[in-house]
Image 1 (cartoon, rainbow, N blue to C red):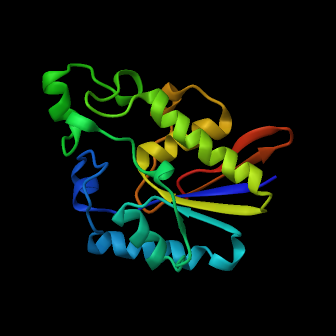
Image 2 (cartoon, rainbow, N blue to C red):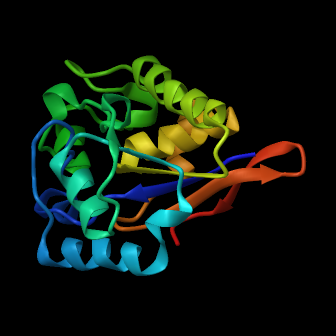
Length: 186
């Protein structure tokens, strides 16, 4: 069975401050550049037969700086579209929507949980159908968590229990007959 590596992009100004970033194009901070290079020190592009990447600048730059220069861009790996909440922190959102959590409430003017799950389910099908030993996806915090949930066939609300750090590497695979998290936030 294919092992799927997930790489969350390196730090941006907005990820540092906790601002929700979906379609806004931001480059990596100096720390983000170092995080991306660190991924390249741990992973060899030659070990992967399928390399997928979100088309957003921060994901592309992370892949490039990690040495993965031959990526297939796919909109299916883009971050959850935050709509009216783009650029806001969770605290700012909760000032108007007390108790808001993306996993339960979604984003007005943005994507629904079902829409995000549908496109990340397509990524899982693509990876599993590829027949490769190892695949890697360069993406984002919320979308990569949903991707992991699709891999595991877990409800989307479980995403709250799988935080992803910037510049992290996680591995999905199997434990005997079950889909499993092999490593998280490495």
